[in-house]
Image (cartoon, rainbow, N blue to C red):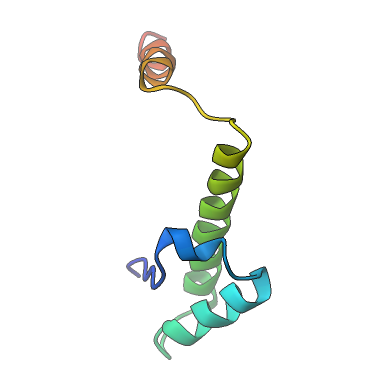
Length: 75
């Protein structure tokens, strides 16, 4: 199933987790499987974690990421 991100990422951190889950469930089609629901919730959780990391300054520069990925490719 294709990801159905129905909110702007800036709005995701403005609602509590329960409301986010309920809104996500409401936005999915009736044919969504439990796997689809879990996948959607995991994506939203990852976005929230990334937003929190950014607020806390736990980010990397473009150069740092390129060096990190470069080291993975050389192994």
